[in-house]
Amino acid sequence: MVEFRAHAIEKKGQVLENTIRETAQDIKDQLKRTFKATAKGVQRLEKTVLDEADDIKDKLEKMHRSMERLSSSFHSSGTSLASQASVGK
Picture 1 (cartoon, rainbow, N blue to C red):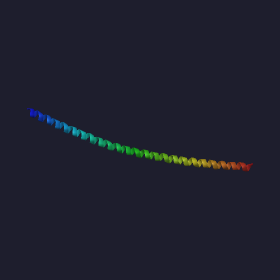
Picture 2 (picture 1 turned 120 degrees about the horizontal axis):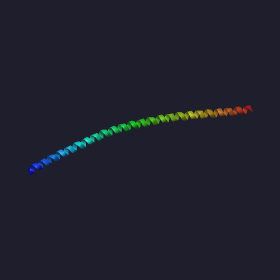
Picture 3 (picture 1 turned 180 degrees about the vertical axis):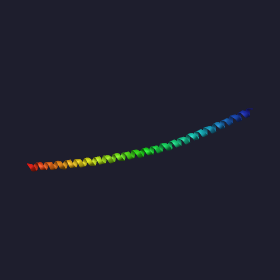
Picture 4 (picture 1 turned 60 degrees about the vertical axis):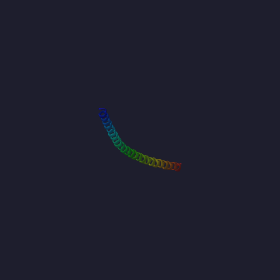
């Protein structure tokens, strides 16, 4: 009778050990899938941020060139007005 109980306890221990192993493997697999999905999401986000940064940089460069042209145009027209004013005197 004692041997039977010891065997039953041993069997339950093995079942419990197997259940724990399977559960741990399931958790590990799920974490691996989650990590891969998260990594892909981060890569997409990184690309989006870099693309947006490039767009902003391009727009700022265009604005800077436009401002330089306006400034240059303003200075050259101011010079011509000043020279015309001095000619008129």
